[in-house]
Length: 141
Image (cartoon, rainbow, N blue to C red; front, side, top):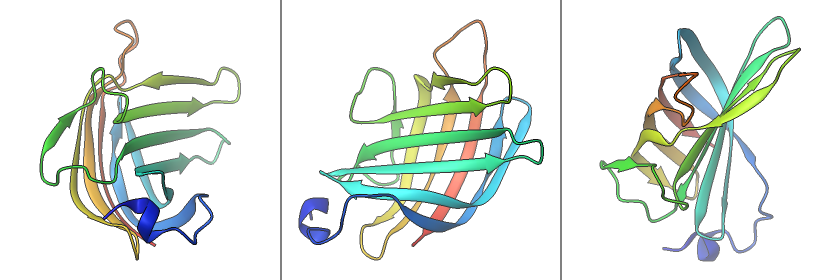
């Protein structure tokens, strides 16, 4: 069923979701229990944020259609309806990179009440600075 039909009365803004999010970005651990999710115009957007004591953070943004095939490895290369970005929020030189050489796998997706389980594997588009990403997530509203 279309996200638009299920959430017709909801304001399309991110909702807090909780669960288990863990993995690595480059050589650094990525672990948090809180994220944000929104379902709007037949797309799901998830933001996973790992904040550090020094004020820096890594944020992973994932976008995919609400009718994504489950339990299937979905390449992100060149597909605008499926994409992932990593934002490195440092105190001196923040930057973001797109995960073009990556695979997204969604194992569970329920729109209402919201629930998603999946994984993001691969690396980003810049061949000079490689930050391999290996993150699993299981979130519920």
